[in-house]
Length: 74
Image (cartoon, rainbow, N blue to C red; front, side):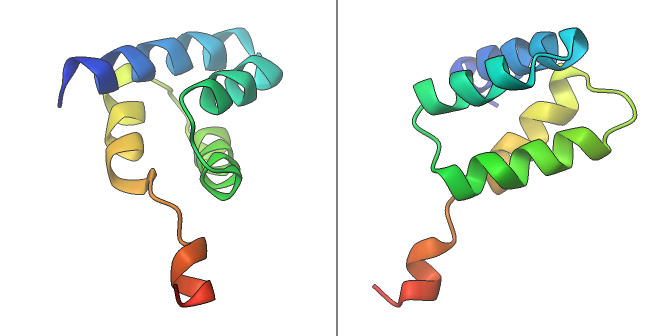
């Protein structure tokens, strides 16, 4: 895991701990995640029982790519 992903995961973990859904959405917008990815990540974060930075980084690393181009057959 790289430092940028680690920083993003720590920031999101702090926002999750504070219950700041709007802040999470704004942060994900600032790091240029597509809206479909933001929705998918928020759903996964809500299902987590304990939101630590390592598990969030794992989710970001595996699920931060948009699937819309696949559906549109670019």
